Image (cartoon, rainbow, N blue to C red; front, top):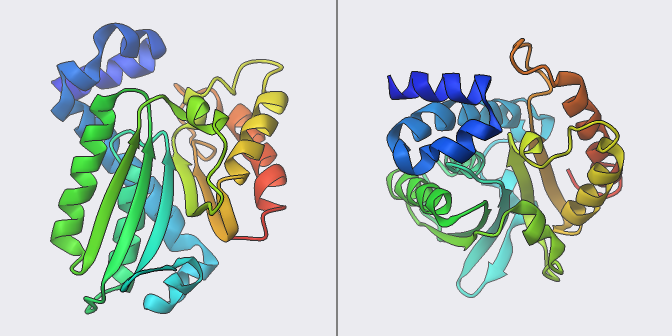
Amino acid sequence: RDVLALHEGYTQRRGAFAHEANPIHARPVAYQLYFLPRNWYRVHRVLAELPWSAQGGAAALEPWLEPHGATRTLRLLDLGCGTGAFSLAWLAWLAERRAGSDAPLTVQLALVDQGHALLELASANLQAFARLALPGVSVQCERHADGVEAFLAHRPEPHGYAIVGAAMTLNELGLLGPRRVSDRAIALADAVQARVRPGGCLLLVGLAGCKCALCGQKRKIQRVLKRFRGRSLGSSGGK
């Protein structure tokens, strides 16, 4: 019943419902059940279909690992993390390639969203998954509660992140209004690109393939993704 109430609220009243009902606090279990499985599946499906993802074993990780004392480190930036679906999909991808290995590895996750409740939920999900499926891996979560645009307004770290991405975030950033797609997308694409280290991976998963009549924003999201692709993927030299 609570999941159905969330579905009706988000599809019929959208932003007004999220602001008034505060479902993250009022219905945290339903909120997670509503968002996490489908968003995780969307990201995981994209990862499985990428050509370089077919490379088996730990060798697929080599371009992104950094030396860190006696272990190695993988740094990931999750913009608009929500329940942690984007990072969880990457951790599942990592677990598949580390099957049978317990070599020490540190995964540093920078989680960005509005408010502390979502960040605590995402961090708990990621830590729980790591304990169950990633022996030998230390998952460290760094939380940024000021939101995506405020985070991107800060000067980027000099070393950047090996993996930068977002799942179902573009529709939350005000990029889809009339006459705003071009300028806003260019500014955000440049800021995101500045966080990707040379040879890194930028992955944006949105609703470009959604055929749901309730969405009604497919073409706008496709234009935003095209703008990001032209500004970031085409010039980063990464994947």
